[in-house]
Length: 125
Image 1 (tube, helix red, strand yellow):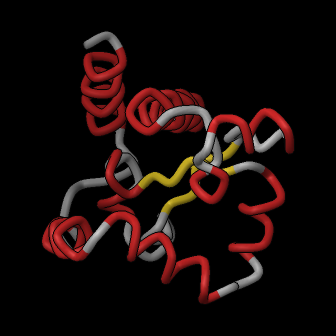
Image 2: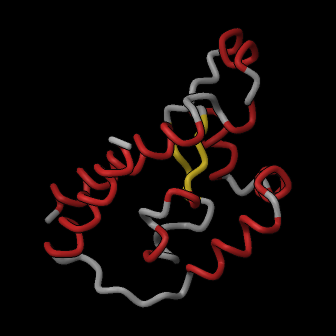
């Protein structure tokens, strides 16, 4: 099952990048990204996947980031979370919160196979 989870994680990352682009959320101007190598190599879970497993593969919960910004955010820089909320907007946040707390069956083969299928479909759209 570890392989299925890793496959789903990689697909989630690809779908988030497809939707939001490969430029760091905090360096969203293409020239800035080129000049400062701010390519999004990570996708941050706005709502942590450990606390919100139901949002682990939610595309809207993904924030493309370069490594330095992701590291800074992981060190609990509250201004970065505020900036994400401001840029994405209140409607995005409320929608994300509505989907949190939904109880699902996690960590079984059927769950990961279904998740992988959904992510592959989104990637190929």
